[in-house]
Image 1 (tube, rainbow, N blue to C red):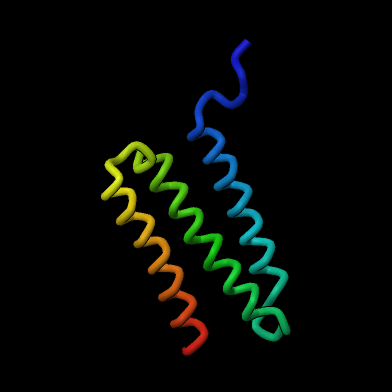
Image 2 (image 1 turned 60 degrees about the horizontal axis):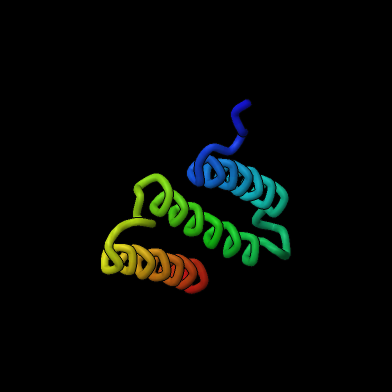
Length: 91
């Protein structure tokens, strides 16, 4: 009998689906008039960058890439999150 989870990419895919549903719930429950809309937006940004990181690591195989390339990708993800937070909070 085959197991449900055959690869790490399968686990990453399930996590991506669960995070997408979580983002949708957060986004639909906290509208612009909500007192939590700023924190909800920041959580959605963080989850989106984490999802992009999962895609890069598991589906673009950056997990096994040379350390310099993976390091650049990790720096890119961190810089992206900082830029998104800054633009949202200052805009």
